[in-house]
Amino acid sequence: MNTKTVVTANELPQDVLDAIDSGHTIEAIKRLRSTTGLGLANAKVLVDTAARRRRVHRPHPALASEGAMSSGLTKLLSLLALVALGYYLWMQ
Image 1: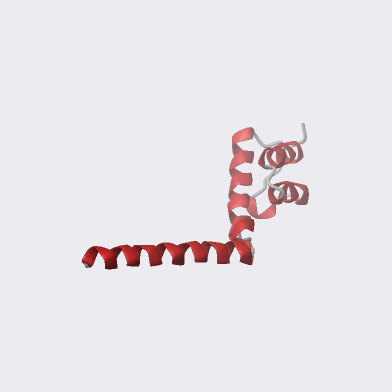
Image 2: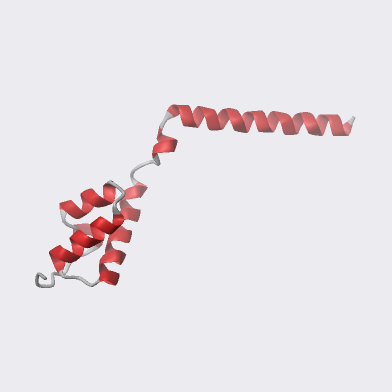
């Protein structure tokens, strides 16, 4: 095991960030622990914090595509039209 190194979620090694970006959280924790000598709990907290911060800047893949957005909007508008029609018929 390497000597312990002080590291924050803002300054993780690039290989750890690559694992986070790939969605491999456990691999990121393993890499961070082997590089820094941190314990499991501390490494997990740092990786989870970095993952949350990095996801803020990246939209979810399902939401990023225009097809998904237009499909969701179409479903919402269809539902609203159905509700409006039901309300209209109920008021008659």
